[in-house]
Length: 221
Image 1 (cartoon, helix red, strand yellow):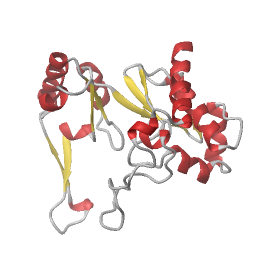
Image 2 (cartoon, helix red, strand yellow):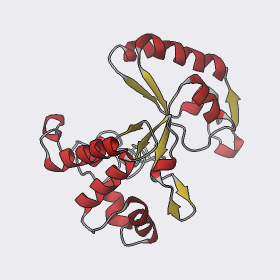
Image 3 (cartoon, one colour):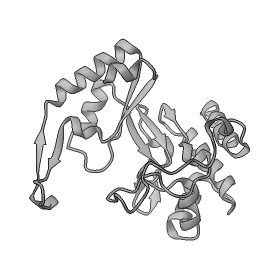
Image 4 (cartoon, one colour):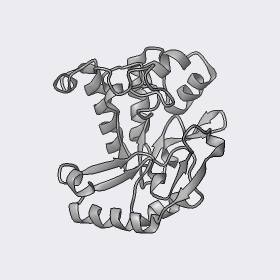
């Protein structure tokens, strides 16, 4: 599977990468408290990832968010896997951590597929404590969501991470997340039609401004 995907990609992101070390198994019909962690040979799995990454010149990004086993991120780093640093999760109490503090061997982004896109988050939080905290950290001057998004993506560009990215949902100005964890039939997870086609994204003014904000701040960094 790795080889098949690496033939067509310069980078692969592994969702819930901690699953190569352990998974919480819950008996059918039971609750999470009745489950137990089942462990795997993570060292062997990371070795396979490293070998295939080298063979195909394809970087590996592991989604190391949520409950992370002790020492797991250090083992990721030793194997050459990149970690994720999301603005929404990088906090020092009520404040957002300066992006320059993100580790080099990481990929920086505002959120993920399981979180609200920036437009939706900003409209809900801009007048609340979290919104004020992000203003202070990212240097957001105005209220308008477009300029705020540019400021946040410039903030990402200035990060210590070797890779900074903008999500398609943020480029397209989406407000609702593509996936809501813990839901099934009550939401159309992974089935929402994008507001802009891939072709239109490259000519859309807002999308180009966001990409330029990241690019220009990367040069300055």
